[in-house]
Length: 275
Image 1 (spheres, rainbow, N blue to C red):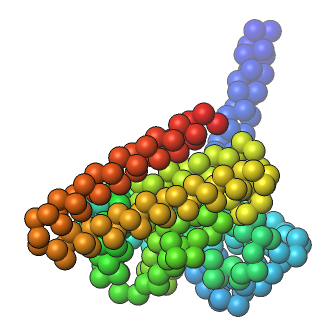
Image 2: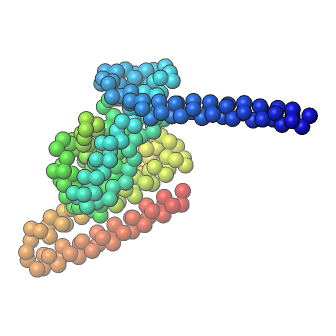
Image 3: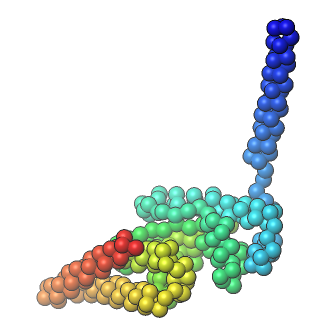
């Protein structure tokens, strides 16, 4: 009797082990197929990418479309890493950022803006924060020299709902990678706008939301522009004039600007922390 029970248990154990072995073998095959699967975007044309964008905008998304979109956004990874490495090695700066915008963010952008999927410039992007507008100009110039093919979007002259910065769009390995160059004040303003969008109304950073909030952000943006404009003008005057009295006056104005800049920075920081 004990022998029969033992034999039955052994048979059951053998079947279980076979099932486990079969599952393990199948899992390895699936994982190998995934690892060896070539990116769908390797052979896809710009027209096909834009047609995918049209389907997304039309709301007729299928599972293959979502997979294609995911592959497309992930295909920017190598270009992003190249851009970050060049900034670190050549400019000695430490950028922050992300190698790929999320699929949900891409879908939202396509619904929000009349832009083709292949033309979206910030699927991959990084950011550099500098001290002031003078340093910002230097860094933008260095980026233009570091990358052979770039375009510039200066949102200081034409702010986007109060947002100010310089965006350098690099074409690297056939992919667009956005490099945001912000001053510390521009960054603090952007952080406040982002936080208000998160806790109050997502449309705030796109010009929506309560009138009071929009007015506050607009005034803060104009104040940042005024301070940085005075700061840049003062730096130019300091280079032009050699007279000691004039230099002393320019330095006095610089100190006032620095003091005001510090005060505004603290206000923006505290406002963001308090949300």
